[in-house]
Length: 370
Image 1 (cartoon, rainbow, N blue to C red):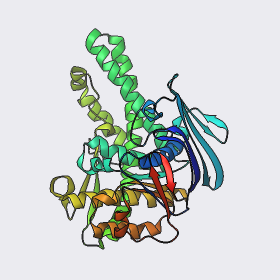
Image 2: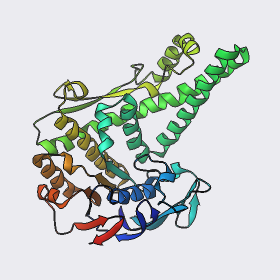
Image 3: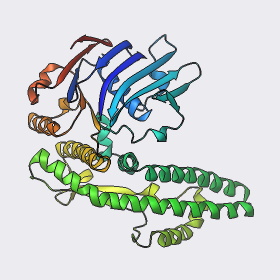
C-alpha cells in the first residue's frame, strides 16, 4: 500500500497544503511546532478516521476556521480516494471512501494498514497493562475483522454489565440479578474468544519480535513476550474456567460494582534474556524493544494481508544513539513506504539514506522546499 498524495485544508498550521510522495522513504523536516507531525496526523486520519495524537478533532481545526478537511489518494490493490471532514459548529466528522460515506470507523480499520512509531510508545513497555493490551488489540484488529467485532461487543458488554452492577448495589432488585446472568453469559462468550485470539496471536507474533530485535542488535540479546491471562485459563477449557471464576468472584463484583474477571484485566510480559524488561531493562533496551514490536507488527500485518502497511515515524531518530539509528535506517530498506519526521538535517548524518528518498521541508505549515 502507498499514499500517492494528500491535501490538507485548515488542518492545524496547514491552511492549504498539497503533497505528493515517494513510494519509499519520505523525510519530513522542520523545527518544533512547524507542522511536520501534522502530515503524519493527516495520513492517520485517512487510514483510521482517528487522531494519531489522541487530540480532540476540534483542536485540529486551524485557528479562526470552521472546519478541517484531509483528502488523499491511496493505492491498495486498487486506487482509492479517502476524505476526512470535520465541522466545528456541529462537532461532527464524516469519512468518505471513493465518494461514499462510511458511517462506522470499524469499517475502515485494516483497510489501509498503518504502523506508527511515536514518543508515546514508551507506554507499551513502561506503562500500564491497558497500554500493552491496546497495542496487541490494535495489531490483531487490523488483520481480523472478526476479532475487532468481538472486541467491540465485549467492551459494550463490560459497560452494560458495570452499569447493571451499580444499579443492583443501589436498588437490590431481583430482576436486575437475572439480567446480570444474561450479561455474564455474553461476557464469557466474547471474553473467551478474545483470550483465544490473543493466545494464538502471541504464539505467532513472538517469532516476528525475535527476528526484528535480532536485525536491530544482531542477536546479542534474546527478547521474549508472554501472554498473562488474568484467569490463567487452559486454552482448551476457557469458557468453562472463565464461567467458574466469574461465579467465584460474583459477590466481590456486586460489592465493588465493577467487572473483576475477563481479558480486560490481562497483561503481556516483555523480557530480555529472561529478565523482565519493565523492571530491569535499560532505556536503550526499552527503546529497541518498542521499535522491534513495531517492525514485528509491520511484517505480521504484511504476511497476513499480503500488503505492506505504511510506516509513520515521528521524530524517533533524535532519541537514538548513532548505532541504533543506523541499524533502524538500514532495516527500513526492507519495508515499503514510510513517513519520517526529523527536527533538523543534522540527524540525517546518522542515517543511511538512498537516492529514492524524498525530502520535504516544512515551516509554519508551509512546504518551503522539496
